[in-house]
Amino acid sequence: MNSFESAQEILKNAVIYFKDQPIGTVASSDSRLEAVNYSHCFVRDFFPGALVFLMQGDYGIVKNFLATMQGLQAQQTTMEGHKRAPGLMPASFKIKYKEGREELRADFGERAIGRVAPVDSAMWWMILLALYSKISGDQSLRENDDFQTSIKEILDLYLKESFETSPAMLVPDGCFMIDRRMGVYGHPLEIQALLFAMLRCSKYLLLDKNENHLILAMVEKRLQALRSYMRIYYWLDKDALNKIHRFRSEEFGLDVENVLNIFPESIPAWLDGWMDEECGYLVGNLGAGRMDFRFFALGNLLSILFDVLSEQQSQMIMNLYQRNWQGLVGEMPAKIVYPALVDQEWALLTGCDAKNAPWSYHNGGNWPVLLWTLVAASIQTGREDIAQSALDIAERRLQKDNWPEYYDGKAGSLVGRRANYCQNWTCSAYLLAYKWVHEKKTRSILQDLKFSL
Ligand code: GLC
Image (cartoon, rainbow, N blue to C red; front, side, top):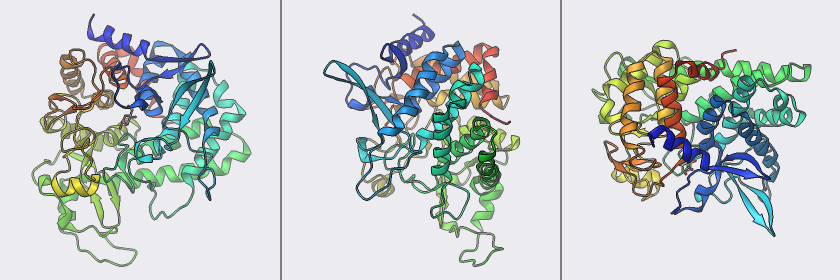
Protein backbone atom coordinates (compact mmCIF):
# COMPACT_ATOMS: atom_id res chain seq x y z
CA MET A 1 0.00 0.00 0.00
CA ASN A 2 1.43 3.41 -0.89
CA SER A 3 1.23 6.49 1.33
CA PHE A 4 -1.82 7.87 -0.42
CA GLU A 5 -3.78 4.63 -0.07
CA SER A 6 -2.72 4.23 3.53
CA ALA A 7 -3.85 7.77 4.47
CA GLN A 8 -7.11 7.28 2.63
CA GLU A 9 -7.80 4.05 4.44
CA ILE A 10 -7.15 5.55 7.87
CA LEU A 11 -9.42 8.47 7.12
CA LYS A 12 -12.15 6.16 5.90
CA ASN A 13 -11.95 4.04 9.04
CA ALA A 14 -12.03 7.14 11.22
CA VAL A 15 -15.53 8.10 10.11
CA ILE A 16 -18.10 8.00 12.89
CA TYR A 17 -21.73 7.17 12.31
CA PHE A 18 -24.77 8.41 14.15
CA LYS A 19 -28.04 6.67 13.35
CA ASP A 20 -26.20 5.07 10.44
CA GLN A 21 -25.22 8.42 8.94
CA PRO A 22 -21.57 9.57 8.69
CA ILE A 23 -21.19 12.74 10.77
CA GLY A 24 -17.46 13.31 11.26
CA THR A 25 -14.17 11.60 12.08
CA VAL A 26 -12.39 10.79 15.34
CA ALA A 27 -9.23 12.80 16.00
CA SER A 28 -7.04 9.72 16.17
CA SER A 29 -7.62 6.06 15.37
CA ASP A 30 -4.68 4.94 17.49
CA SER A 31 -5.77 1.91 19.48
CA ARG A 32 -3.44 2.72 22.36
CA LEU A 33 -4.79 6.18 23.04
CA GLU A 34 -3.58 7.89 26.19
CA ALA A 35 -6.10 10.71 26.35
CA VAL A 36 -9.76 9.79 25.97
CA ASN A 37 -10.70 12.92 24.09
CA TYR A 38 -8.90 11.83 20.92
CA SER A 39 -11.87 9.59 20.22
CA HIS A 40 -13.95 12.76 19.88
CA CYS A 41 -14.64 14.50 16.61
CA PHE A 42 -12.90 17.90 16.91
CA VAL A 43 -14.14 20.72 14.75
CA ARG A 44 -10.71 22.02 13.83
CA ASP A 45 -9.39 18.50 13.19
CA PHE A 46 -12.27 17.69 10.89
CA PHE A 47 -11.74 20.76 8.72
CA PRO A 48 -8.94 19.37 6.48
CA GLY A 49 -10.81 16.04 6.36
CA ALA A 50 -13.90 17.93 5.23
CA LEU A 51 -11.88 19.49 2.41
CA VAL A 52 -10.84 15.99 1.32
CA PHE A 53 -14.48 14.87 1.32
CA LEU A 54 -15.62 17.98 -0.57
CA MET A 55 -12.92 17.45 -3.19
CA GLN A 56 -14.07 13.86 -3.67
CA GLY A 57 -17.67 14.96 -4.08
CA ASP A 58 -18.53 13.21 -0.79
CA TYR A 59 -20.87 15.94 0.34
CA GLY A 60 -23.08 13.94 2.70
CA ILE A 61 -20.64 13.63 5.60
CA VAL A 62 -19.86 17.35 5.50
CA LYS A 63 -23.52 18.27 5.42
CA ASN A 64 -24.27 15.96 8.35
CA PHE A 65 -21.34 17.35 10.31
CA LEU A 66 -22.52 20.93 9.79
CA ALA A 67 -26.04 20.05 10.84
CA THR A 68 -24.82 18.06 13.86
CA MET A 69 -22.74 20.96 15.09
CA GLN A 70 -25.61 23.37 14.60
CA GLY A 71 -27.84 21.13 16.69
CA LEU A 72 -25.23 20.73 19.41
CA GLN A 73 -25.10 24.47 20.09
CA ALA A 74 -28.09 23.95 22.38
CA GLN A 75 -26.11 21.60 24.64
CA GLN A 76 -23.99 24.37 26.07
CA THR A 77 -24.27 24.48 29.83
CA THR A 78 -23.98 27.73 31.74
CA MET A 79 -22.12 28.44 34.89
CA GLU A 80 -24.02 29.82 37.81
CA GLY A 81 -24.37 33.56 37.53
CA HIS A 82 -23.61 33.53 33.80
CA LYS A 83 -25.68 33.85 30.69
CA ARG A 84 -25.43 31.38 27.85
CA ALA A 85 -23.43 32.64 24.85
CA PRO A 86 -25.62 31.30 22.06
CA GLY A 87 -23.00 31.77 19.33
CA LEU A 88 -20.44 29.47 20.92
CA MET A 89 -19.81 26.10 19.30
CA PRO A 90 -18.27 23.05 20.93
CA ALA A 91 -14.63 22.07 20.50
CA SER A 92 -15.60 18.46 19.95
CA PHE A 93 -18.34 15.90 20.29
CA LYS A 94 -18.63 12.16 20.70
CA ILE A 95 -21.25 9.46 20.45
CA LYS A 96 -22.28 7.96 23.78
CA TYR A 97 -24.27 4.79 24.24
CA LYS A 98 -26.92 4.99 26.92
CA GLU A 99 -29.22 2.04 27.53
CA GLY A 100 -28.55 0.81 24.04
CA ARG A 101 -29.33 4.17 22.47
CA GLU A 102 -26.92 6.47 20.68
CA GLU A 103 -26.55 10.01 21.97
CA LEU A 104 -24.34 12.91 21.02
CA ARG A 105 -22.42 14.70 23.69
CA ALA A 106 -20.66 17.98 23.00
CA ASP A 107 -17.75 19.51 24.88
CA PHE A 108 -17.63 23.29 25.12
CA GLY A 109 -14.45 23.22 27.14
CA GLU A 110 -16.15 22.19 30.37
CA ARG A 111 -14.40 18.80 30.24
CA ALA A 112 -11.39 19.74 28.13
CA ILE A 113 -7.92 19.58 29.63
CA GLY A 114 -7.36 22.97 31.26
CA ARG A 115 -11.02 23.91 30.66
CA VAL A 116 -10.20 26.01 27.61
CA ALA A 117 -12.96 27.71 25.61
CA PRO A 118 -12.94 26.79 21.90
CA VAL A 119 -13.11 30.24 20.33
CA ASP A 120 -12.01 28.91 16.93
CA SER A 121 -14.81 26.29 16.57
CA ALA A 122 -17.65 28.52 15.40
CA MET A 123 -15.28 30.21 12.97
CA TRP A 124 -14.14 26.93 11.38
CA TRP A 125 -17.79 25.87 11.24
CA MET A 126 -18.89 29.00 9.42
CA ILE A 127 -16.01 28.82 6.94
CA LEU A 128 -16.87 25.19 6.24
CA LEU A 129 -20.54 26.01 5.82
CA ALA A 130 -19.68 28.60 3.18
CA LEU A 131 -17.31 26.22 1.38
CA TYR A 132 -19.86 23.43 1.46
CA SER A 133 -22.61 25.64 0.04
CA LYS A 134 -20.35 26.99 -2.67
CA ILE A 135 -18.80 23.71 -3.76
CA SER A 136 -21.78 21.37 -3.49
CA GLY A 137 -24.25 23.95 -4.81
CA ASP A 138 -26.67 22.83 -2.08
CA GLN A 139 -28.11 25.99 -0.52
CA SER A 140 -30.57 24.20 1.75
CA LEU A 141 -28.44 24.50 4.90
CA ARG A 142 -27.50 28.12 4.34
CA GLU A 143 -31.09 29.13 3.66
CA ASN A 144 -32.53 27.19 6.57
CA ASP A 145 -33.97 29.45 9.32
CA ASP A 146 -32.12 27.71 12.14
CA PHE A 147 -28.83 28.08 10.31
CA GLN A 148 -29.50 31.75 9.62
CA THR A 149 -30.16 32.20 13.34
CA SER A 150 -26.92 30.42 14.24
CA ILE A 151 -24.93 32.57 11.83
CA LYS A 152 -26.39 35.72 13.36
CA GLU A 153 -25.79 34.49 16.91
CA ILE A 154 -22.18 33.75 16.07
CA LEU A 155 -21.73 37.20 14.57
CA ASP A 156 -23.38 38.76 17.61
CA LEU A 157 -20.99 36.99 19.93
CA TYR A 158 -17.84 37.57 17.90
CA LEU A 159 -18.55 41.21 17.12
CA LYS A 160 -19.81 42.09 20.57
CA GLU A 161 -18.02 45.01 22.18
CA SER A 162 -15.99 44.08 25.23
CA PHE A 163 -12.79 45.85 26.18
CA GLU A 164 -11.38 46.42 22.70
CA THR A 165 -9.09 49.21 21.62
CA SER A 166 -8.31 47.74 18.20
CA PRO A 167 -10.13 45.82 15.44
CA ALA A 168 -8.45 42.59 16.63
CA MET A 169 -10.38 40.16 18.81
CA LEU A 170 -9.49 39.64 22.48
CA VAL A 171 -9.43 36.01 23.70
CA PRO A 172 -8.09 33.84 26.55
CA ASP A 173 -5.03 31.58 26.40
CA GLY A 174 -5.21 28.28 24.51
CA CYS A 175 -8.52 28.83 22.73
CA PHE A 176 -7.49 27.51 19.27
CA MET A 177 -5.17 24.85 17.82
CA ILE A 178 -2.76 25.59 20.65
CA ASP A 179 -5.17 24.57 23.38
CA ARG A 180 -2.88 24.81 26.38
CA ARG A 181 -1.30 27.71 28.13
CA MET A 182 1.44 29.05 25.85
CA GLY A 183 1.35 32.81 26.35
CA VAL A 184 -1.16 33.07 23.50
CA TYR A 185 -3.88 35.05 25.28
CA GLY A 186 -4.80 38.52 24.08
CA HIS A 187 -4.88 38.97 20.32
CA PRO A 188 -3.26 35.84 18.86
CA LEU A 189 -2.72 35.89 15.13
CA GLU A 190 -4.54 32.65 14.29
CA ILE A 191 -7.78 33.95 15.81
CA GLN A 192 -7.53 37.16 13.80
CA ALA A 193 -6.98 35.28 10.53
CA LEU A 194 -9.98 33.04 11.27
CA LEU A 195 -12.10 36.04 12.21
CA PHE A 196 -11.29 37.70 8.92
CA ALA A 197 -12.26 34.58 6.95
CA MET A 198 -15.41 34.04 8.98
CA LEU A 199 -16.58 37.62 8.43
CA ARG A 200 -15.97 37.27 4.74
CA CYS A 201 -17.95 34.05 4.67
CA SER A 202 -20.81 35.66 6.55
CA LYS A 203 -21.29 38.09 3.65
CA TYR A 204 -21.94 35.11 1.45
CA LEU A 205 -24.01 33.19 3.96
CA LEU A 206 -26.42 35.77 5.31
CA LEU A 207 -29.50 36.18 3.18
CA ASP A 208 -29.95 39.51 1.47
CA LYS A 209 -32.84 40.72 3.61
CA ASN A 210 -33.57 44.13 5.09
CA GLU A 211 -33.08 42.88 8.62
CA ASN A 212 -29.52 41.77 7.75
CA HIS A 213 -28.33 45.01 6.21
CA LEU A 214 -27.14 46.61 9.42
CA ILE A 215 -25.08 43.62 10.48
CA LEU A 216 -23.67 43.25 6.97
CA ALA A 217 -22.58 46.88 7.00
CA MET A 218 -20.81 46.29 10.33
CA VAL A 219 -19.14 43.18 8.97
CA GLU A 220 -17.83 45.12 5.98
CA LYS A 221 -16.36 47.90 8.15
CA ARG A 222 -14.75 45.43 10.54
CA LEU A 223 -13.25 43.49 7.64
CA GLN A 224 -11.58 46.56 6.24
CA ALA A 225 -10.34 47.73 9.63
CA LEU A 226 -9.06 44.30 10.62
CA ARG A 227 -7.23 43.79 7.36
CA SER A 228 -5.43 47.14 7.50
CA TYR A 229 -4.62 46.63 11.17
CA MET A 230 -3.07 43.22 10.49
CA ARG A 231 -1.20 44.40 7.41
CA ILE A 232 0.30 47.34 9.26
CA TYR A 233 0.63 46.53 12.95
CA TYR A 234 1.19 42.77 12.94
CA TRP A 235 3.57 42.98 10.00
CA LEU A 236 7.28 42.64 10.66
CA ASP A 237 10.03 42.93 8.09
CA LYS A 238 13.50 44.38 8.22
CA ASP A 239 12.28 47.96 7.87
CA ALA A 240 9.63 47.55 10.52
CA LEU A 241 12.13 45.91 12.85
CA ASN A 242 14.56 48.78 12.43
CA LYS A 243 11.80 51.21 13.21
CA ILE A 244 10.77 49.33 16.35
CA HIS A 245 14.41 49.08 17.41
CA ARG A 246 14.52 52.89 17.51
CA PHE A 247 11.01 53.40 18.93
CA ARG A 248 10.54 56.03 21.59
CA SER A 249 8.26 54.94 24.38
CA GLU A 250 5.72 56.68 26.64
CA GLU A 251 4.18 58.63 23.78
CA PHE A 252 0.81 60.06 24.69
CA GLY A 253 -1.80 61.31 22.22
CA LEU A 254 -3.42 60.45 18.95
CA ASP A 255 -0.63 61.03 16.45
CA VAL A 256 2.09 58.86 17.87
CA GLU A 257 4.26 56.29 16.15
CA ASN A 258 4.58 53.71 18.90
CA VAL A 259 0.87 53.38 19.60
CA LEU A 260 1.13 50.21 21.69
CA ASN A 261 4.11 51.42 23.67
CA ILE A 262 6.35 48.57 22.59
CA PHE A 263 9.72 48.67 24.28
CA PRO A 264 12.59 48.07 21.84
CA GLU A 265 14.37 46.09 24.56
CA SER A 266 11.74 43.38 24.10
CA ILE A 267 13.08 42.48 20.63
CA PRO A 268 14.58 39.00 21.08
CA ALA A 269 18.20 38.42 20.12
CA TRP A 270 17.40 35.67 17.59
CA LEU A 271 15.67 38.20 15.30
CA ASP A 272 18.86 40.02 14.46
CA GLY A 273 19.95 38.58 11.11
CA TRP A 274 16.99 36.20 10.84
CA MET A 275 15.35 38.05 7.92
CA ASP A 276 16.81 39.63 4.84
CA GLU A 277 15.11 42.49 2.90
CA GLU A 278 12.86 40.11 1.04
CA CYS A 279 11.37 38.36 4.06
CA GLY A 280 8.64 39.27 6.48
CA TYR A 281 5.84 37.78 8.59
CA LEU A 282 2.98 38.58 10.91
CA VAL A 283 3.94 38.58 14.58
CA GLY A 284 2.16 36.17 16.90
CA ASN A 285 0.34 38.64 19.14
CA LEU A 286 -0.07 42.31 19.87
CA GLY A 287 -1.18 44.22 22.93
CA ALA A 288 -0.24 47.04 25.23
CA GLY A 289 3.54 46.99 25.59
CA ARG A 290 3.54 43.58 24.01
CA MET A 291 4.68 42.32 20.65
CA ASP A 292 5.09 38.56 20.60
CA PHE A 293 7.81 38.15 17.99
CA ARG A 294 7.44 34.38 17.69
CA PHE A 295 6.55 33.06 14.24
CA PHE A 296 3.28 31.11 14.38
CA ALA A 297 2.90 29.01 11.24
CA LEU A 298 -0.85 28.52 11.08
CA GLY A 299 -1.75 32.18 11.58
CA ASN A 300 0.72 33.24 8.89
CA LEU A 301 -0.29 30.59 6.38
CA LEU A 302 -4.02 31.16 6.90
CA SER A 303 -3.48 34.88 6.41
CA ILE A 304 -2.08 34.08 2.97
CA LEU A 305 -4.86 31.61 2.16
CA PHE A 306 -7.70 33.81 3.36
CA ASP A 307 -6.44 36.84 1.47
CA VAL A 308 -5.63 38.96 4.51
CA LEU A 309 -2.25 40.02 3.11
CA SER A 310 -1.05 41.87 0.08
CA GLU A 311 0.59 39.86 -2.69
CA GLN A 312 3.98 41.23 -1.71
CA GLN A 313 3.57 40.32 1.94
CA SER A 314 2.51 36.79 1.03
CA GLN A 315 5.61 36.40 -1.12
CA MET A 316 7.77 37.67 1.73
CA ILE A 317 6.43 34.97 4.07
CA MET A 318 7.19 32.32 1.46
CA ASN A 319 10.71 33.77 1.12
CA LEU A 320 11.09 33.40 4.87
CA TYR A 321 10.18 29.72 4.57
CA GLN A 322 12.65 29.24 1.77
CA ARG A 323 15.53 30.95 3.55
CA ASN A 324 14.85 29.51 6.99
CA TRP A 325 13.82 26.07 5.80
CA GLN A 326 15.87 24.27 8.43
CA GLY A 327 14.26 26.18 11.27
CA LEU A 328 10.68 26.40 9.99
CA VAL A 329 10.37 23.00 8.28
CA GLY A 330 13.44 20.88 9.00
CA GLU A 331 12.61 17.19 8.79
CA MET A 332 8.82 17.51 8.89
CA PRO A 333 6.56 20.27 7.62
CA ALA A 334 6.05 22.32 9.60
CA LYS A 335 7.06 23.90 12.88
CA ILE A 336 4.01 25.19 14.75
CA VAL A 337 5.90 28.06 16.36
CA TYR A 338 9.45 29.33 16.10
CA PRO A 339 11.44 29.53 18.29
CA ALA A 340 10.52 27.49 21.37
CA LEU A 341 10.11 29.04 24.80
CA VAL A 342 12.99 27.93 27.02
CA ASP A 343 14.08 28.14 30.65
CA GLN A 344 12.41 30.84 32.72
CA GLU A 345 10.21 31.93 29.83
CA TRP A 346 8.94 28.37 29.39
CA ALA A 347 8.28 28.10 33.12
CA LEU A 348 6.41 31.39 33.30
CA LEU A 349 4.42 31.27 30.09
CA THR A 350 3.43 27.58 30.07
CA GLY A 351 3.17 27.14 33.83
CA CYS A 352 5.91 24.44 33.62
CA ASP A 353 3.90 22.30 31.18
CA ALA A 354 6.03 19.19 30.63
CA LYS A 355 4.21 18.23 27.42
CA ASN A 356 5.15 21.64 26.06
CA ALA A 357 8.84 21.26 26.88
CA PRO A 358 11.11 23.26 24.54
CA TRP A 359 10.92 22.01 20.92
CA SER A 360 8.07 19.65 21.68
CA TYR A 361 4.30 19.59 21.00
CA HIS A 362 2.91 23.14 20.87
CA ASN A 363 6.18 24.66 21.98
CA GLY A 364 8.18 24.34 18.79
CA GLY A 365 7.14 20.85 17.70
CA ASN A 366 6.56 20.01 14.03
CA TRP A 367 2.97 19.23 13.04
CA PRO A 368 2.27 17.38 9.80
CA VAL A 369 -1.26 18.81 9.73
CA LEU A 370 0.37 22.12 8.78
CA LEU A 371 1.34 20.53 5.48
CA TRP A 372 -2.01 21.38 3.94
CA THR A 373 -1.72 25.08 4.72
CA LEU A 374 1.95 25.25 3.71
CA VAL A 375 1.32 23.54 0.37
CA ALA A 376 -1.83 25.58 -0.27
CA ALA A 377 -0.06 28.87 0.50
CA SER A 378 2.88 27.86 -1.72
CA ILE A 379 0.59 27.08 -4.62
CA GLN A 380 -1.42 30.25 -4.14
CA THR A 381 1.73 32.32 -4.30
CA GLY A 382 3.09 30.40 -7.29
CA ARG A 383 5.89 28.78 -5.27
CA GLU A 384 5.56 25.28 -6.67
CA ASP A 385 9.08 24.34 -5.59
CA ILE A 386 8.21 24.90 -1.93
CA ALA A 387 5.00 22.89 -2.26
CA GLN A 388 6.90 20.02 -3.85
CA SER A 389 9.73 20.00 -1.29
CA ALA A 390 7.29 20.05 1.62
CA LEU A 391 5.36 17.13 0.19
CA ASP A 392 8.56 15.17 -0.55
CA ILE A 393 9.79 15.53 3.02
CA ALA A 394 6.45 14.51 4.51
CA GLU A 395 6.20 11.57 2.14
CA ARG A 396 9.50 10.12 3.28
CA ARG A 397 8.34 9.79 6.87
CA LEU A 398 4.62 9.84 7.50
CA GLN A 399 3.56 6.37 6.48
CA LYS A 400 6.71 4.78 7.86
CA ASP A 401 6.10 6.52 11.19
CA ASN A 402 2.40 5.55 11.18
CA TRP A 403 0.95 9.05 10.70
CA PRO A 404 1.91 10.67 14.00
CA GLU A 405 0.29 13.74 15.48
CA TYR A 406 3.50 15.72 15.92
CA TYR A 407 7.30 15.53 15.92
CA ASP A 408 9.83 16.76 18.48
CA GLY A 409 13.24 18.38 18.28
CA LYS A 410 14.72 21.51 16.80
CA ALA A 411 14.81 19.86 13.39
CA GLY A 412 11.60 17.92 13.97
CA SER A 413 13.29 14.58 13.41
CA LEU A 414 11.79 12.67 16.37
CA VAL A 415 8.29 11.25 16.54
CA GLY A 416 6.58 13.27 19.29
CA ARG A 417 7.16 11.75 22.73
CA ARG A 418 3.46 11.54 23.48
CA ALA A 419 2.14 11.78 19.92
CA ASN A 420 -0.74 9.55 18.86
CA TYR A 421 -0.38 7.46 15.75
CA CYS A 422 -3.00 7.40 12.99
CA GLN A 423 -3.85 11.03 13.67
CA ASN A 424 -6.54 11.90 11.21
CA TRP A 425 -5.71 15.46 10.38
CA THR A 426 -2.16 14.29 9.61
CA CYS A 427 -3.66 11.92 7.02
CA SER A 428 -6.06 14.53 5.63
CA ALA A 429 -3.31 17.13 5.30
CA TYR A 430 -1.18 14.69 3.37
CA LEU A 431 -4.07 13.73 1.07
CA LEU A 432 -4.79 17.40 0.31
CA ALA A 433 -1.14 18.26 -0.31
CA TYR A 434 -0.72 15.25 -2.56
CA LYS A 435 -3.80 16.09 -4.63
CA TRP A 436 -2.93 19.76 -5.05
CA VAL A 437 0.64 19.00 -6.09
CA HIS A 438 -0.25 16.19 -8.49
CA GLU A 439 -3.70 17.04 -9.83
CA LYS A 440 -3.98 20.66 -10.87
CA LYS A 441 -7.72 20.48 -11.38
CA THR A 442 -8.24 19.94 -7.65
CA ARG A 443 -6.77 23.36 -6.93
CA SER A 444 -9.97 25.29 -7.52
CA ILE A 445 -10.85 24.87 -3.84
CA LEU A 446 -7.90 27.15 -3.03
CA GLN A 447 -9.64 29.99 -4.85
CA ASP A 448 -12.84 29.20 -2.95
CA LEU A 449 -10.95 29.55 0.34
CA LYS A 450 -10.29 33.21 -0.42
CA PHE A 451 -13.95 34.08 -0.42
CA SER A 452 -13.17 37.32 -2.18
CA LEU A 453 -16.72 38.00 -3.23
C1 GLC B 1 -4.56 18.68 20.72
C2 GLC B 1 -4.36 19.88 19.79
C3 GLC B 1 -5.67 20.38 19.28
C4 GLC B 1 -6.43 19.26 18.60
C5 GLC B 1 -6.59 18.07 19.54
C6 GLC B 1 -7.17 16.86 18.86
O1 GLC B 1 -5.24 19.06 21.87
O2 GLC B 1 -3.68 20.91 20.45
O3 GLC B 1 -5.45 21.46 18.39
O4 GLC B 1 -7.66 19.71 18.16
O5 GLC B 1 -5.33 17.69 20.06
O6 GLC B 1 -6.33 16.40 17.85
